[in-house]
Image (cartoon, rainbow, N blue to C red; front, side):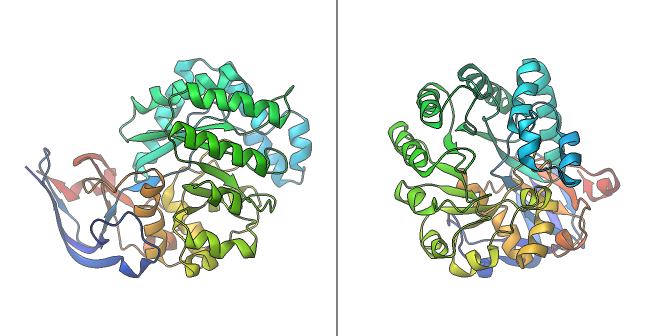
Length: 387
């Protein structure tokens, strides 16, 4: 039994056995065929198409409850975020929505969104806690994340973002005691912290690094998003697996980050939707950083779940090539999650790879193959798939 993908205009190939690449020079996009020896049996006509690995979204905030569209309208018409937050918006709004929703409501919404992600080519994704804003709420969020992982088609990893915001009635130091207890009690794959002037400081990042080491989990951090906190040296000292956002990274921290085995996870959707600075992505890539793209899919600052759209924004704003963007959203993104690319997760696009960023807003995914099975076919592309 096999899935035979025939006559592709481009097949994306990376060297065997590498966990990540610091340069896209080794990424090939050449005509060819691809055969997957799996339990399924199908033949796919890929004439005119690019065939690439499934996308890996290594930074989302699923599961969450509800949306914040009214907040976005206020934001874009000039209301400062601080005013929105004082009125109960921001993370606090998502925390209220999560608390008010039943478990089944939360999971049903997240399942629908994961299915939509699959249709846009995401075959592996990460989710986070962070909207609980209480000991009980964060523990529930971790439990719901694990339940979601058991319901969706894609493999899903779960990150404990227990230090996302300082809940009312706590200081940052006091909440870190709760975050440490949650990290020791909850079933999560990695630990994360939001290092920012309105959240947690570098001393808390260092503490989270020690907690990660003590519990045997990778350390990740939301870093240098809205302020230049100089958190990169602290994160590298504690062996961080990734630093995410980096819109305000200090120029002196680019070279040390590029020299480390710590990924630079860039989130152009949040930069656009939240009117943030643009990360120095060209400088990071040229310095040899392990560059990664992700959606930061969440109801507030980046309600974008489409990796093709993220690639389009990145290529335009970062000055990256298509190969750089594809590498950043496949192999390098998988490494952030401690995974190898699954050779049986494959996308057939409806045109050449160069059309992914060029046709901004178009979903280029014609066929999704996950774990060797054809799990989604775009209706207008059904003629390509036969038995």
